[in-house]
Structures are given as structure tokens and as C-alpha cells.
Length: 192
Image 1 (cartoon, helix red, strand yellow):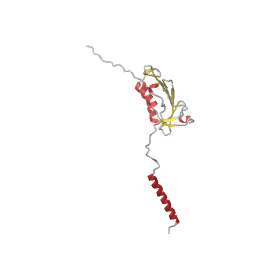
Image 2 (cartoon, one colour):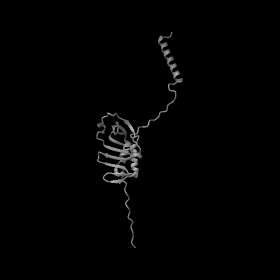
Image 3 (tube, rainbow, N blue to C red):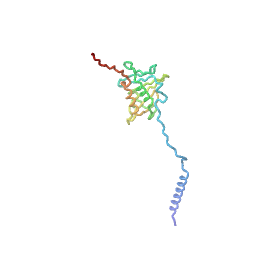
């Protein structure tokens, strides 16, 4: 005769088989869901290039200058003296700053001294036509070296992509903004 433990195993087997058949006919999800990507939040999401009228930059290496939009919509580079600024570089620089995406947000009570935001390495201040100001303080690189710590005004610190911010730093080189006026060429003349 069949033992009692064998009957228990057979009952468990038939219950499991019944659950399997039921789940095949009645899946838990009613349809396939396609995953959607969530865009990373933009650092200055409510700012537009057209509204920016001033960019002030300074770093701990002593570089400091201002880019100022004039009434005729041209830009001036202001440091030791005032010079016309390269419009394409100004547009690229401000657009790159406005396009920085937040990779991670940190809590408001995060220790700013540990990430270099008490005495930031660089500061960028943007002013727009409504006289709003965004002061972006740039601190240390993250331990994984794939981002930088930033703080905008009194908001909690965030991390942005290293390569995007490195592009901004490259564009912020003062020599990029100065439009060189062409030197007139001397044409030799021959006397007959």
C-alpha cells in the first residue's frame, strides 16, 4: 500500500500543478508594459537663453570676468577692459550651463565642506531680464570622478555629469570670448 508521506507529496504536486495551470491561463499582469525613460531634471529648468542678460564667472585661480548683453543684443566681455564677445561662444556657453542635467540630488542638510561647496572652486552667476539671479557654486569632483557637486542659490546640493561641466569649463576660457579684430594686411606697392 502507498505510504502516508507519498500521498502528501502527491497532493502538494497536484496543488502546485493546479496553481501553475491557473497562472498560465490568468497571468498576474493584464498586458505588457513598455518601460519609459524619465528624463533627468535640468539644473535651471525655467531659464531660457534669450532671457539671460549677464554671466559672471570667477574661480579660485584668479580668473574673473563678466559677459553682458547690450541693448543692441550684442555681448561684451568685461574683465580688465571691455571688448566685444564672440556671440557663438557666448550662446554655446550659456546654453551648456542651462542644459546641465542633475544626476543626483543630495539632502539639504548635507555637509557642504566635504564636497567643496563652502569655498567653491568656481562660481557662475546668471542674471535674466526679470532680474532673477542664479548663483551656481561648483565644488569638488565626486569620489567616482564622474560628476561634480553643485549648489544653486539656497537649493540642496546636486551632482551633475563631469563631461557636461568640463565642456562648460572649456567654453569659459576667457580667450574664447574675445573677438579678435582682423589686422589689416599691407599690400606692397611698386614704384615704376
